[in-house]
Image (cartoon, rainbow, N blue to C red; front, side, top):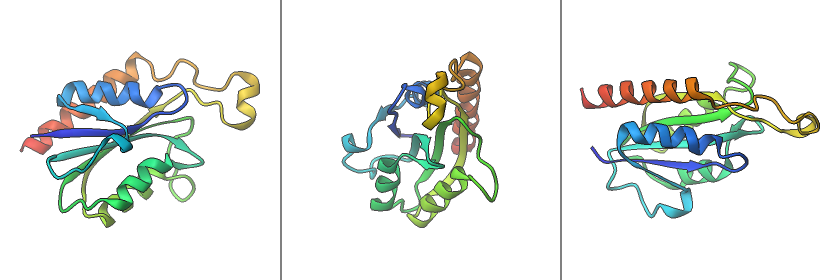
Length: 153
């Protein structure tokens, strides 16, 4: 199984830290969207990003909208100051729909809190300063182990 995680981590490196933990279990590379020529040679493609204004980073959305999944398997990794909320801020669901429209089969999603300094939060140093933490990284590895097991079966 050949895998890759396409990741955009901008502010604090939170998302890249989590993506690298997942990549360690899946034995794959983590690359930015501009570093990936195509996904044809991969069986499993992860998309990782921080959440900005209730959605994945624009570069990840643009990448997904320009590739054809052709039945490939995909998964999501994200960090955010806020958890996804149905009917309000369900960024995971929106991204899963984009992936399915591009022809991917989505196997799962992992999200955890990340240091958030959006808007007025910056005045107070933000929230979730110590996230992702060790438990988040352990949970991300557990997610990837289950993902790997389900993909192999």
